[in-house]
Length: 93
Image 1 (spheres, rainbow, N blue to C red):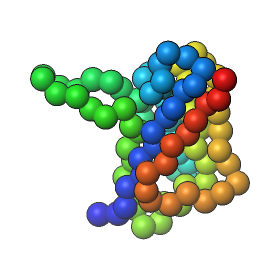
Image 2: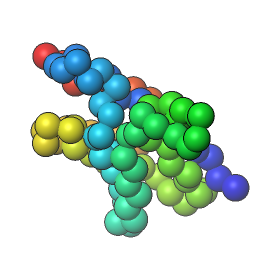
Image 3: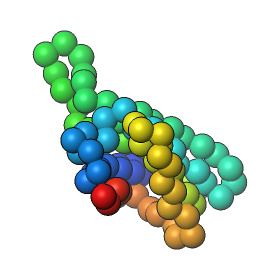
């Protein structure tokens, strides 16, 4: 029953502006890892928002976020603690 973290991607380098197919990983200071793939589909007659959603327990403090974009380019955010909420990672041209 902890807080949640959502990461939206914005790719300004390609027509795939939401980063569909990207892999997003978050890691805590104690080495725990969670990973999600950004999808643009859902179940029958439904749609998932193109977000990477993570559940965080009270002890999970995000130490790094790594995005592997669909073309294989890796973008990493380190050195700042990230808490619960919604964030956007942007890849510039």
